[in-house]
Amino acid sequence: MMYETQNHWDTIYKTKTAAQVGWTQEVPYTSLEFIHSFNLDKTASIIDVGAGDSKLVDHLILEGFSNLTVLDISAEALEKAKLRLGEKAKTVNWLVSDVLDFKADRAYDLWHDRAAFHFLTSPDQIKAYLDLTANSVKTYLVLGTFSETGPDQCSGLRIKKYSADTLSNTFKNEFSKIKCITVDHITPFQTKQNYLFCSFKKHDPSKSSL
Image 1 (cartoon, helix red, strand yellow):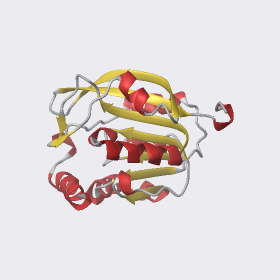
Image 2: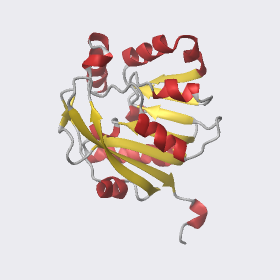
Image 3: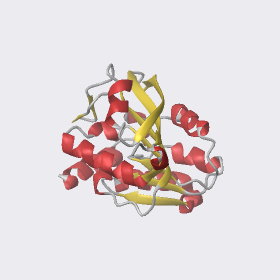
Image 4: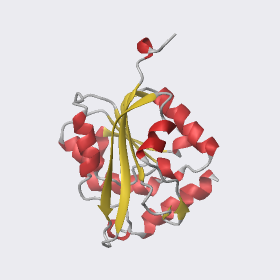
């Protein structure tokens, strides 16, 4: 199954340009606004999960963040991003992995995921992701999924749509919601996709009830 999924995404990134895929953003304004709201130190450990060849990493490098990890199932996607960044790519930790197979070697100050989580549609997949974030996120989590009025599929794959309440309830055991917003993403071919973005903060264990 992992190989099929990897092959699916490698084929997309090998055969399509940025102008031919719906998720392309020249400037990921919403993600950057959420990240800026945390006032992180420039040495904070940040991971962008399911990033593809997103330009978020470009902007974070420009802003001086120095401890960046980019993870995606598609080696083709990451190669595109590395090529685009040139020498700057050497400052980033690039990881080719299905997120559900990912074994983090640290807890990240910020875990960012725009449009990867919503591809996990079974209870087992969702639980695995919850366990992973519980163990791999030190402080902040930012998730972007299709909203309840968003598309039912992406790139031919079924997705799971969320409201602010359902996404917050999904992560409530380990994270407290900070903020949720919906935004319209205009694709390169001028169609509209409605996204839900939520930010969360990891529960402080010292404040847990006994």
